[in-house]
Image (cartoon, rainbow, N blue to C red):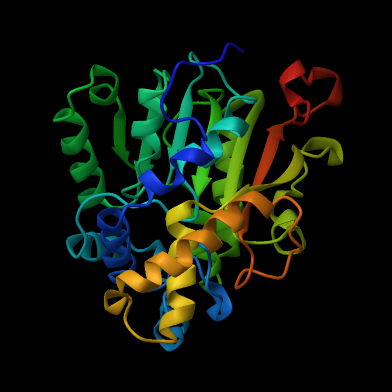
Length: 323
């Protein structure tokens, strides 16, 4: 695939410019408005990962993360955009291996992420984003319609449950999930829903298309989700787990949290930012070789690249190869 002309590509020299205090303070406020979705068993992720373990545990028992009303109320408390775990800049090198500018892309559980916008700005012309929250979709649709760039204006936003997609079979070349699966893992009995979401992704993908699930979960906890089998016991997916660095913002939030020792994120000082930024740079440079020490300590998340296999192996096309 041809290299796209974009200012969104990874560039370590841009680290300081990207992590301005104004931007990070905004992210800290967005995180503080969250209640820790994406953190089961009290684990802090490289994304928000809230500190109220009791609240998260109760939320899991009530399965509220599959409740549209919960998310509508949540988005009423937040403004702007926020990316869990990682961002397009970090994902770009991997996505370029999977799709081209004409690919049909579905982003499930989109939330208020900048990922669809960044995809559009980088030349991907067919991006559909869905979320269970009507308020979230309406806000993102309005934000896109007000954008200066025609590519962003053309983004498609639909309120939809990822476990009950209304799209027809073979509608997409790529399906992306960034945090939706993790939100459901917080709940005690959401495994059937998770399986439905993965099955629905398989249904709407073309043969050889790819489901990319971005999660803090290590292979021993996430690979079992993708071991579904079809007719005759043939596997439905060919899966490869790769490491993706947490975004600079997510790493900085983690460093600041450690310094605050339980105090509110809004109390972070300029000196804390200055001390944390060199450590963030080291994290970004060393994540490939870093030991997997668990979600609370990792400087990376995982991307599970799940290539759709045909019901019978002979029907697999060239796109079912691994990265």
